[in-house]
Length: 350
Ligand code: NAD
Ligand code: DAU
Image (cartoon, rainbow, N blue to C red):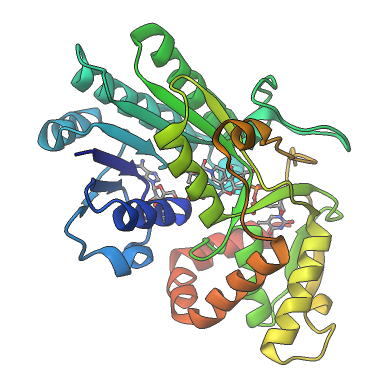
């Protein structure tokens, strides 16, 4: 039986990943370790919390003594490491928090796994979930390949790049069995509304301005979150140890085109006159060091493991909007309290 530690399972991608593994593999025992920061929400997992193969543990991945006791208690055979500070704008305001969780936290987990698996690495796996942002920023042409040199440019991407380097260092130095995947921008249900798509969905519902950084010309490659966790499942079970796999949607949008598509779909779904949401678009001061373009080449994953995205973007966006419109209580809960203060600080200074 596999005993899997998923970190950050109460967050956006982690909750989809946890749900997939708990429901698809009832024979696996899944422990979800999450600190429940502002981004972690057990409501995201309500539908599986009663499953007999699922356990939630609250704790910090940067607390090594605690990790040792957790490994001793559960005797994990694999780690799916998703926990992170994930928002670029927050990393610009508070870079040290990103070093603590993304770097110290990842090295602590690696250290706990290494110590616990010492002398018997057979069948063990440390899977690190990372981002395309480690590769830096593209111009109008080209793609990120697994072989592209790292060139992180925000405190967030620098912390993720550092964590990727440590994972590879543990593979080479201690023969810890590792896999890494670097994915492009995800979207879908349970996405925290500090990120572009859910923030704009929330603001359109509430007739609030849609803040577009700079001229809205930056390009992101969007992937539906369930396609991402399906790719992780494939790599976890069939990918080669020591390898890196890029995951992406081949789905590039400038921010302004994406928000116009979102506005169009939301007007129709909310029964508002065409063009009303677009009037909320407001160009605001650009993000410091704003990466121009990300675009993933995922052909290694496609050729080696036969993975391709399942959804067209317009369809995925429509499903996402429907989820938010059906879950306004979830939105209300996560946008109250601390979030209000973050929002005022973040956007009033622009
Ligand atoms: P998220 O911010 O929604 O969730 C992060 C989770 O980690 C939260 O539940 C939080 O409580 C938990 N956490 C934070 N610090 C912790 C700590 N010290 N100890 C234990 N738990 C802690 O993030 P997300 O968007 O779901 O991203 C998950 C992972 O995927 C991250 O590693 C991120 O770098 C990577 N990633 C994200 C995207 C994206 O578009 N969101 C794309 C590619 C890769
Ligand atoms: O590429 C993968 C990364 O995608 C992940 O590693 C990160 O964890 C995730 O947060 C995401 O990073 P981005 O910075 O690309 O996502 P965000 O939703 O913050 O911004 C998307 C684009 O929209 C980016 O060009 C900045 C812009 N933007 C964002 C916000 C929050 C705006 O124009 N206005 C906004 O208010």
